[in-house]
Length: 404
Image 1 (cartoon, rainbow, N blue to C red):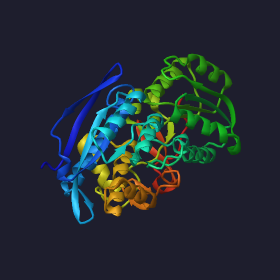
Image 2 (cartoon, helix red, strand yellow):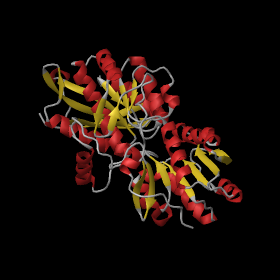
Image 3 (cartoon, rainbow, N blue to C red):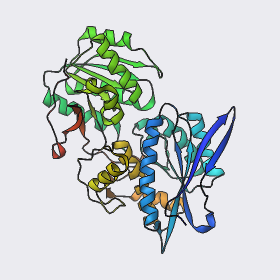
Image 4 (cartoon, rainbow, N blue to C red):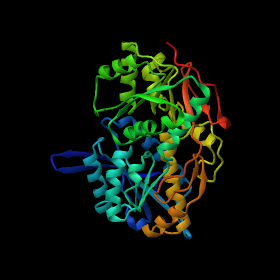
């Protein structure tokens, strides 16, 4: 048996039916293999993000199976990832989840990228009683549905906005007016609304607060209005392609503010690479940065070990998506080991009781299934590099104004 066992799958949907193409050897259930269903956005608008999840999953899988698998009671069981490409389509994500559970007979699920698609698949997992680990979903609106089988490794969105309010107030006390432009989608919308809701409490006046439709290619009307209001802080939410486009159009229209925040653009290498000098000074908040120094007893052993392994494999820095995705499967592994079983009910119970420190940081799921809040990194692009502004324990630089 190979040390890394995985089934490669891609999904093509024609009209109402889905046809799955399977690559590689399958492993019979009689051989004692734990199957984890992994719907991934490998094509479509979230392909860059979905591929990050896949990289992290593969890194975890290789190490687990090289060690003989997950310890379940008095034996070890190898792990198989059953992967489908749901093509960044919510309906297809739902179909994939159904097939993984009913046809492929997976034991557990990992969630798709983003809060919107996670919410769709979580409903399927709940219906069948399958524990699901979400690595890139932080919107409270996903976790307030009463799901008992959903567990997420990201802390709540409010932790990000509160951290920015506090740090920006200290670093740039003269900033008073904020303009908010958010994508009308689950996670970006929740991040926009979180900032709008608490701005007054932290001494900011919201001078613009609008959402743009998914797929918007021209922000000129919104940006021109923002320019006329002369805000001190421009705050934009969306996914990487949205943010790159908005930043370029800001430059074209001469829209400027001392603080420009794009959630979560600077956390991604492709954002900085795609903008070049226009990324300079842009801030964001993140759920993880490799400057953290966590020691752990997981398959990586420490933050720095994960960082070195990732650099060796990919040739560039990992971001929070990579780290959280690997951590999600570590959490599932630890729960299986704690339960001493792959019985779903026992593993679900073990997940609710989990209290561990991983290379990614602490993981302890609250009553709603979300990882508990902690001090989250504030980041900024300076001289073409991503630096940490806060918390002080991992600070790399002081905040600077966006250059004109």
